[in-house]
Image 1 (cartoon, each protein chain N blue to C red):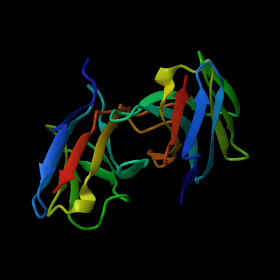
Image 2: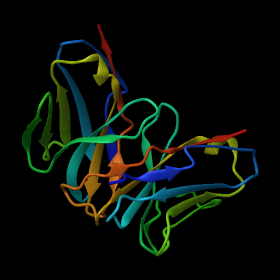
Image 3: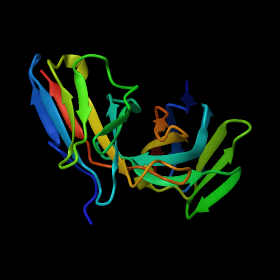
Image 4: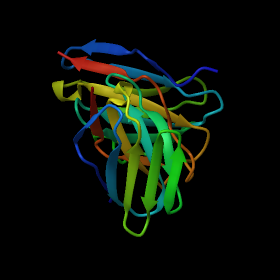
Length: 109
Length: 116
């Protein structure tokens, strides 16, 4: 089976940095993905990691350690519009994506 | 280039009625995935289909739920004899082929089912 864990909620201040962690246990690992979902909207793709290390994409970075089954999403220079749910997802060799329950991030002024 | 199109966006049904949710994948995409999202929860995988084939239905409830993706036309998620617990957002996603280690999903806006 597969198990993906991430914190339920986080709060941060505008302009700050926040790190959202994700741990996973899966067979047939084939990439880890982060999606953003605003309330009432569709999830949208943010980033993916296949190999260990950090991938940077503007204000967003994502890190992966396959040996530890661990990833994090780092958001810098937080803006109010970053308030959303952040979903960690694992692709498997079976050809599908399994999602964690998401972390609801609230950015406060 | 239209994205993943789902309809209806909102659907209200009474207990015991049927709900049909439709999904047209992005142009050029032949793989479709259905996910269910309960309020304040994550996306739960239901079924993965390719044209005319169900690849993985391990997340589908054994009764009342069915899905198809015919050669022509949209994918359909069908829920028979709906109950209040079926109230949720149902998201469809598509990909051009089998998901790889760099292949993300493209989601539709979702169909929100309310069962009275």
